[in-house]
Length: 292
Image (cartoon, rainbow, N blue to C red; front, side, top):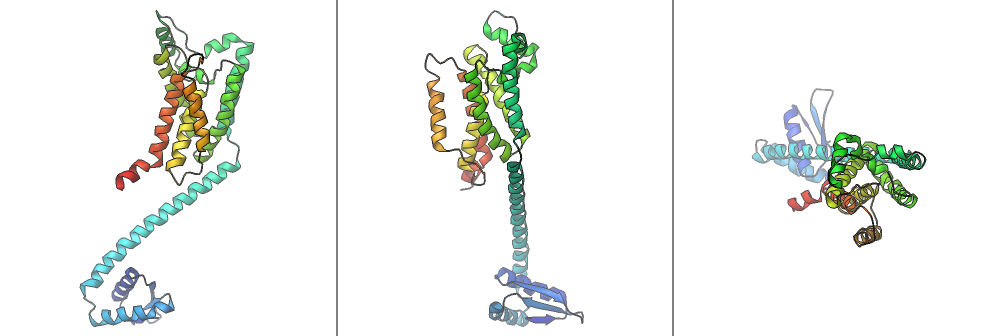
């Protein structure tokens, strides 16, 4: 115990001054209705006694008023930091809970893609209902009219594949990347990303080449770009895509632009650009650079 005050305000004022100086102290009311000021660590008593002597000699010294204001600001800042830490703890706990459970949205996407492929093999007319079909003088006009008259075909072509190898390649990548997004965020974030990357890929490919993009590869490149840049620039993000993986995928991305590769380069590009921008902006690196 450092000192007993008859009233609480001077005890609190000195406790605040000690707090700003890095000396832990607290005020407790005694049985007699007075207020005892306690110092938490015995080896800090000497510093506390020196400040007490100064306070008793001149309690109205402006330095104590300034330190009270500083103590309030410091406590408010510490409360804000504690809230941030608590949010991070809750986020990590949620991610761990997701990691223990199956990535249901990822599996649902794979099941839809496999199911559509099998249906197309057995009933080709069903597959035709999943892609835009319309009339027009050009292929672009026909596809655009088909999208307008059958709006679900903005997204369903993403789950239609042109062959077994095409399906296997995309399904394996969706399983790896979709699972990471689902565990880092939520199934609904994965669904949103699939819709954004898929629809943008269908639209860009239409105006890029005048043909229809099918398959999950645009979504794959979108998820890849998001995870790579989010993991690279956000130290709090739980997953990092290896640089070698990104290099191999970029090599395939570039190779597909050569003649002889009938792939949807527009869909790949839309997914990669949007996913990379999304991952970088979500990482907060741009804000950190601005502050520096």
